[in-house]
Amino acid sequence: MKVAEAEAELIWWQQKSLWVLLFLGLSAGIPLFLIFSSLSLWLREAGVAKSAVTFFSWAALGYSFKFIWAPLVDKLPLPYLTSLLGRRRGWLLLSQIAVISAIVWMALIDPQDGLVAIAFAAIALGFSSATQDIVIDALRIEFADGRMQALLSSTYVAGYRIGMIISGAGALYLAQSFGSTADHYSYEAWRNTYLCMAVVMLVGVVTTMLIREPDSSTQDKVYPYATSDYGRFLLLFIISISAFVATFKLFPDTPEIFEGYLQLILSFCFSALAFSVSIVVAVAAAKLSLMLGIANRQLVSESYVQPLADFLSRYGRLAFWVLLLIGFYRVSDIVLGVIANVFYQDMGYSKNEIASVAKTFGVIMTITGSFMGGFLVLKYGVMRILMLGAILVSLTNLLFMVIANNAVDIQLLIVVIAADNLSGGIAVASFIAWLSSLTNVSFTATQYAIFSSLMTLFPKLIGGYSGTMVEAIGYSNFFLVASLLGVPVVWLIYFLGQHLALADS
Image 1 (cartoon, rainbow, N blue to C red):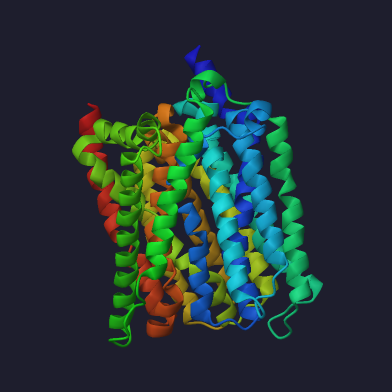
Image 2 (spheres, rainbow, N blue to C red; image 1 turned 45 degrees about the vertical axis):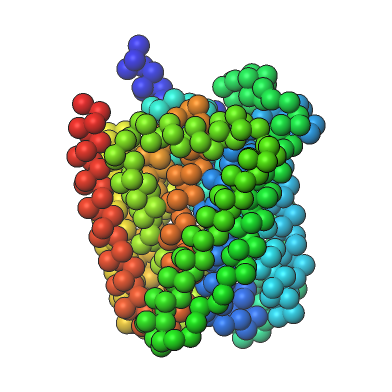
């Protein structure tokens, strides 16, 4: 009987949950490139400086801070939507409407006339898209048991990458066909492109309306508190976030003391200090609010304290090393990915060539790699494939040095993109499966949000400086540094593979 069940699980196209994750993955993948690569080319064509373009990657830091409001998604009922659609679907629909609204907002702004305004719109898109990810991640874990998580993760990654093809290559093709080129910038072309992306997001809305709510719990058990308690909980969240934003905004700018590398290091350290101080102030504001009785202590404990306490109790002394691996596993490819589109353009590749090779063929290779990773995890175990993915990503990043030192060569670009994205697909699929295995289903949304937020926080903070690093050391040295960032990750996987095995035995 168990053999038959396992064989049935491997026939992925017969699993309804996999199809649902494919379409939800597509919905989640569309916003990403509208903040990263497509936006970077739009800004470059509009005449924005390279260093400023890569700083726009920070607009997606909402993905890295989503653990802060994930408990709201888990605990806060939405008026009308929750009773009509259910706990998960109500939040999913709200986040998708917010994503569409943010994309339309970006479409209505010309960067040449409103760079700050488009930055706020991009931040709104990152926040709403990250909220959508919180709900989809919870749905994915609640749809099936651990045996199916590798295939669910692979299918989700496939859908996500298809969404990235649409908002990456698709957006570039549309912008070009609407009349915007590197030599002739057209705001109208990019406006129409982003409006088309907003329409494509309706795929996610339709999927949300058609799927069923997971049978993980009843409505009464999910929302046992009074309405006023949830309102006060939301107020506590607003107070803490306001304290964080105010502190970060009032923090002094980085002093101009050094030049070159030293100034770059100082800027990064100063930003890290500003972030740390802002976190401390936000936590202090939350504690003071609790002392004043603004929120229900039990609800706050269930939302923030208990999910973290559960993780620490299960992993003990290894918890620090687990979090360290989560925080740095994808540092090598994310840091490189922030500057990739600008790099291709600087090397002389046209927008259509970037769309065809990097954003279409490359994403197909990533999808292929993600399914390879899913099946390899089923056969060989998650830690071995996690190690394989880390090694491959680090090695293939070195191939970009070859592109940097050669003239435009489409065949060379195809080979490098194939190797890099195939490796990335294997790494991401195995990593998502591993993160899912770390999550306690009792705290699904919050714990997975913590993990996936930490996964991108440090890479994106570092990636924001990628344009400045390239200007300081050149592309070849930058790609070497990006590759070397993956070396400590390999050691971490080996260390945890040994000790987690001992802990389970």
